Length: 75
Image (cartoon, rainbow, N blue to C red; front, side, top):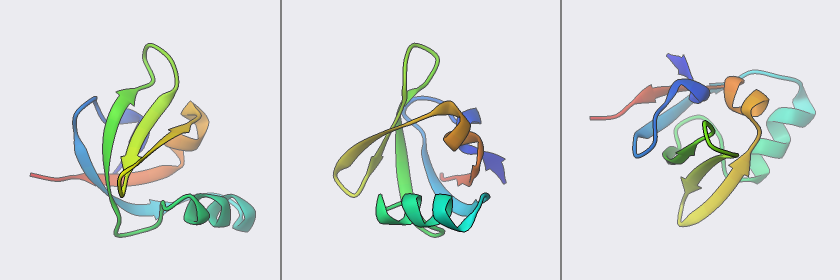
């Protein structure tokens, strides 16, 4: 289990856990990020925002948010 901010562009990962307060977790859940969902790292935040693909959508999240989302690498 590693934080999402450690993932690289092009990787597909599964969300295992989200750390933070109830409001933070609820906000991410409403965006489609919750344990069990598979996401693709589109931009790893090294040259701008951290951008992920979730269910056909692209979401931009802050680096701090990415550090609070714990994932496992697929394949």
